[in-house]
Image (cartoon, rainbow, N blue to C red; front, side):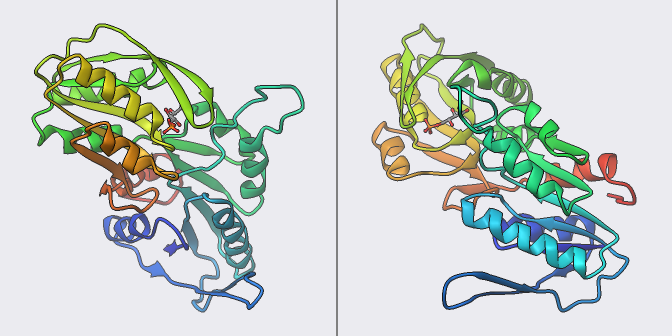
Length: 291
Ligand code: R5P
């Protein structure tokens, strides 16, 4: 079996190869003068199982993944497992308005073409797994994040919206502290409104947990609410740190004490690896993989 290091989430691929004690494949990746992508697999992978690790975000990384899959399929791989540490477009998981594309479905169908199994981490909504036309599974980085938070004397966990409530509950259970959630209304792609709500946060070290930090507006406004209510320190933790535009600045300006993210998208805040949760789910979902 081989673990193929794609062009994104390289830390995940390297960590996974170490955990599974399997060799890493490094194909040749190049760009033509017109910026089109080129891939060439030099190793003999005929009859082998290959795990391709590639975050499908931003758009360019999706194209690169499809081309890598084509090369691996043509080189005679026995089974192809596509590991998507972050599956972009997962938030467009339905038609919010008539005439819209279900983008998550469109991308999932294309990825399924040269895949036998798909694994992703903390998808925004679990039902996107059904969009793949091959068996697809998810694992969660919440317990790894919570283990990391345990070292930080956290005594209250907050979900910035109801959708993140279960994550906050799970993390609070591991940390052994209380949790709560806020009511959030999305105004547009970059702005949210947090409804004020009495929280038991006075004098506490709080961790806000979410699946994605994109523009940072959700976190910034949640931090402000906590600080207004007398929280001592506030740190934010997410699985997928997109940090669009001035997200980092916005969060820090709200007096955030620390930003923590995983390595599904590499950033200065990638302090936790999702390789552990991927390695744990593989033997339960993909045949012939042992931990
Ligand atoms: C949406 O419900 C997600 O869970 C996140 O809360 C959202 O994507 C964060 O977006 P932003 O950082 O732009 O507020």
